[in-house]
Every structure is written in C-alpha cells, then in structure tokens.
Image 1 (cartoon, rainbow, N blue to C red):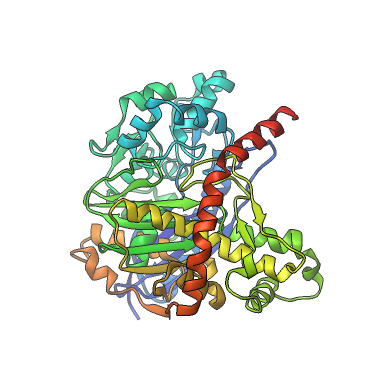
Image 2 (spheres, rainbow, N blue to C red):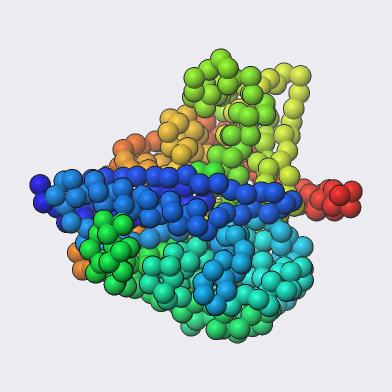
Length: 508
C-alpha cells in the first residue's frame, strides 16, 4: 500500500514520541525514547541537549523505516516541544549549559521580586507568560546575578527545538508559540519585547528569529537525510509548543471547547481568536497560529502526586502487586466521593496556575482517626482535579463559557479518575481514542502548512472519541459542597507557604 504520511514529533520532558499519520489521521507507525532529568543541585531540573537530539533523530529514523516498509512516503515532519526550556550556546551553537526545563526552580527569588513589581504585571500583559521560575525571562535574570561570566560568554539563548533546527539547518529560528512562552515576546507585535529584553540583560541578536508555527524549511545534508531515512528535501515544519498542539490534537479549538490534560503535571486550555490576558495574572496566553491563541493554566502536580503516593505511602506494593496504579484506583473506589471530609492540596512541587507560587506545599486537611490509607488515595486523586477546577473557574471569570471538556494524558487510563473529573467539573468529559494529542496536533499543523487541508475544522473532524463520562448528580452535589472549602484553604495558606519556605531556606 503506497501512502503519503506526515510525521509528528513531540519532544517532551521525559521522552520523545514520534508518529506517522495518513491523510485521515490514522496512526501508521510510532516510536518513543526516554531520556534523563538531571537534578544534582537544589531546584535545578535539567536535560542533556545531545541526549534529546539523539532521541529525536532515533525515533524519526525508526518511524521513517516503518513507513518505508509499508511503501509509504514521508511528505513532511512537524514538531511539538515542551515550553520554557533554555540553553546557552556559543557562536557555533555548542551548548554552554544543559537544557534548563520548565520545572527548574532556581529563579524563584527573582520571580517573586519581579512579580511584586509593577513592571512584572506590565510584562505579563504584553507577553502572556505569568511571572514564574518556569519562564526563560526569570532564568536569565538569575544568570545575571549568579553566573555573570557564563551570561557574558553566551552568544545565543535558545530552546531545545531551536537547538535541533540549528543542528539540522544552521539557522537560529523560533516559532511564535515557543517564543510566546518565554516571557520575552510581545503577543500583538509578534516580536521580542524591548523592556523584557532589558530586564533579562540580553540583546535582540542573542535570540532566534521568530517565525510562524507553519514555517517550513528543507535542504538536509545528504548524509543526515540518509541517516534519518528521508528525502533531503523533505519539509520540516517548525510547529509549536506541546500545550497548544494538544488542543488542536484533541479537537478543542472551537469557542467553549476546553482541553484538560493530566500527565506528570496538568493543564486546562481553550482557544480564543486574539491574545487575551487575565487582570489578576492567573492564566497564560500562547500562540498557536496568527488567528488562534490558547489561554489557560498549568498545574505542577498531576500524575506526579499519584506517583508520590505510590512510592512514599504505598511503597510496600511494589513486591506484592503487578500494577500498583490499578490497585490504588480500585482502592479509591471503595471510598465515598469527598473522601469522607479529607482534602488534599497537591502542591508537592510548588504550584503554577492560578497562584504562580513556587513556595506552595502539599497538605492533607481534615485527617481524623476514621481515615485510612484508602481515604488518602481518593483525596489525592480528587485534589488534583479540585486544583484543575480552580483554573476552570479563572477562565470563567475571563468570559470563557465552557461548552465541552476533552481530556487527555496518562490519567485517562483510569475509568475512576475520568469519572471523578466529570463529577468535580459537573460536566460531560470526552476522551479521544488517541492519547498522543501533541503528535497529532503537530501533524495537523503540517497538513495545513502543506495544503493537505484548508482549515483546522477539517482536521478536527478526524479526532475520534473513545469515552464519554456523564456527571453523577449525587456526586456533583457532594463535590459542590467541598470545592469552596478547598478554594478557601488554597488561597488562605499562600502566605504561610511562603513563610515556611523562608524558614527552610535560612536553615540550608
């Protein structure tokens, strides 16, 4: 069977996933490869750019070979990447640092100081990136204060996707989507923001050239093309960030269509026709195309909270249960909704939306002698969803009226967790058949760039839905009584979290 295919590549935080799609959106081949996170220093969370480069090339070559075995032809390759990464390189593009990830907390103090200033709010309004240690803006300020010699030696400051494209084509280019997540990019001008550059202590020439997310480049060397198993003139579409492409990949691009994801972290996002920021700075705004902008909020603690529970509270299960996660969710189902009054604030790694406070800490609230470990499981799963619901509430105050929710991420493997989302959100939850929304979103962007489709509505029709969860009325009533308590606790404890963090820092 001779088929023309598009390859979508998703460069994630812990792995790269690569898939080949036909014109109908069917997956014809796939490959993935993991890589390491390096956390040797307190608050530092980094990756090896070369390790990621090898993973990306390895998965592309693997998928291209599988496509060739089907007598298929690779017509284009498009890229999704995690946001907020930062790499210092010299004039030849050689890394001077590892890739500093979104989870890196080294610039917490700098973020706090900027957030408290009037300049911080002004920059957020222009760039759409909340002031937080995740953003390259605050990381660059940190380098100014802590590693000035390295800062002076850097010829360019780039993201992981920019690093890959330079290695392949010798050009420093960045898509509008990745650029819009740096805190350095003016949303309406689609160019670098002068005041943000000044605060970051860098020159315009130290950043890549911004281009459309549908920008295409070709002309790989014959040696590299042979290594990847593709034609040298195969167009590489630069693509966008993983968050905005996930919306496209699950078909959540119509007004009121909300994408919800829970993987290691979590997010709630919706598409709007022009840049929009929140008066209170609770949500982000990132570019998908010139006519599609994604607003929403990420949470730090999604599946990572469940993993913490498995590894630290139920560490005894490793030797007795083949699938600890399945066991834990079954135990959670034995507990009533609301966990009999036990609430869990899931701030194990600080928190982003809607507080953007890296100092937040996790809390079990309401423990009594009547609670056991199964209550803790239920409370952790519900706590992650309560936090996502706070982001939904922020979107509602920004005049977003949710009409439907489309869920994706590792949590969708759990029927119980999916139903909890429907009950806590008090809305129907639709789950697409494919759980690789960013790969599919990247492929759909390429289909548009290469004129396979006229508009994204054509592509959205290709999204197949596998599950639908309808809220259970009795459960909705229970959660509606607990949610205000969770919200008040989360907001009122913010000063105490900061005070506790200061004590901890003083003792180090």
